[in-house]
Length: 359
Image (cartoon, rainbow, N blue to C red; front, side):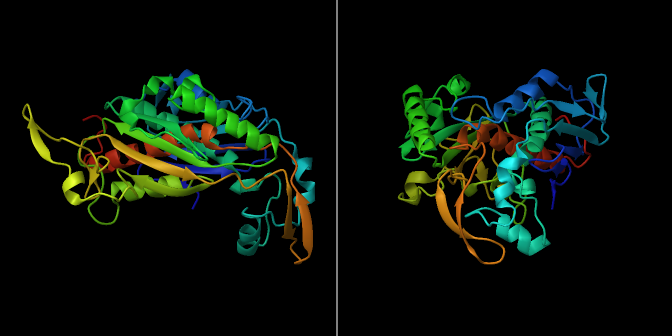
């Protein structure tokens, strides 16, 4: 299961400390203008070493397209791409070859496959998500042609939480802070908290909010294949994600009379006065903004002593080494956007019986 999608499909490959990360994108419509500056900027947003609150690993993360792009446009054939790994410190993981790190995939990978790449987690490393950002960037470029825009931001780190709706914030401010939060006061508090946690060798989690504007009515299937289920599956495939909610989600302290989205005639167009449903009703998009939240656990690698066992069941006093994020949220924002873009484009293409791209 290294392939994501139905029509617009990404198959990714590579490990954290292998030669490269890459992928093959199939089903991308022909004639999409490939803006390399935009794609590289998407990778830069996910790139390690971009600020004092992210891992200091230095990678250029430059993508090279091997096929499927000709004279600046997609051709409709499979798009192969590669991103070279240039800054591996594999020796940082020598002490982990036979040790099961707490809350990592070491034990489960070993039990399932009988072998694992212990260098930085191998295939289970979040470095794999760079392939998703490449595919997501291409999906965003395609979605631009039908007026769909996707933006995400950090809405909570630890106990520091944005209390207002996304509609109350200036989302153009998201990229002005390294934590990617549109509330400047809360952003500074989040940064201070991450730095405090990092100084102790510990980690902390939080929540990312994502908004999809301009999605057409009718995306999604009524029973199996609901749009919110697809988005939830996409988000839960991201490393460290523990929860997904859309619309009002777990805010259940209301009566139906308070949260029903009432329909009205908006100058000849049927719309809803509110959007508690999060833009999806009956598993199908209704034309309103789609918004959801994704919960990330604290990064499992902490630079502190922990008790664990090795593959022989012998107790080990473990202290991890290497370069790690104290909080994954800032770098996960573009990953959430990428998975949302791939999902929406995939479901849009499935909705087009003749497979023609434009409306």
